[in-house]
Image (spheres, rainbow over the protein chains, first blue to last red):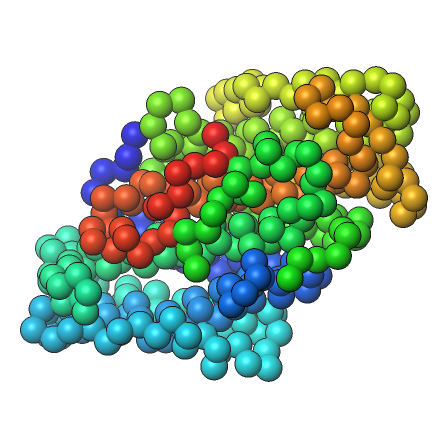
Length: 182
Length: 182
């Protein structure tokens, strides 16, 4: 059973919980969990939190404002997937968690101040790859983007114990995940 | 880069954070997020928390004690994957989160009271499917089991917005996950 068409309040309820959930999971955790990756140029939990901060600054609310200001007459800026590198340099995971919480709170304050009505959710913007998208789709994507990175963090951390679990490997679903979020 | 052989403190650091992370994510969230499933007899976030409680009561510390008491001369009880149905009946997600936090705290108090030494981690037990396993593998599995269900919860919740995100579907890794934890 899937939820009916998403309501703004439902989306915001998730968005406002993500920083605290990541904080409870990651703050004070040994670096072996938070700084290690899945190999190559893959991301650690630390990198993912940096990416989430970068999204708050450059992606989500800026795109909401573009839809409300320009509709589908102006194309969104392309999101820089390496943009987090500037956010994370020289910082601790605790710094990043604080910055993510502050950036998300600011985003949601701005979103609430827009007093969006149900009919606003149908307003259209223009995505550089997809063409026309709606405000409703953008807000739903913001929430699922949080979940995709929670999914990734759990997978990256589990990878660190891939050998340690011995034969239980076959029963642990997260170790079968081939990584859908780079 | 994978962590070196897991240390007990590192494992416990994760185990003690999971209840608070799930609490921050799920408490007070609209039921559309927490009570919905991926269809069929799949689990909701609510069911997963029930399963985690059931594991605390019947799986992890009971198996630790069996290893320390009987070594590999006695086979672990098979874990009842439907056992959570009794845990969740008639309860709210908030009840379950409280119960999980209490059960986990009790487990970790018991684990700490054992004062395990490094050499204890090599002690052997007998798994009904795998045969000989070590205490170290059991403890690592306990941590990765938390992560596998955090991975599952993020996937189950994202599924509720599968249609709502429109064309962004292709960029959201969690929506590509075919479900490695039932």
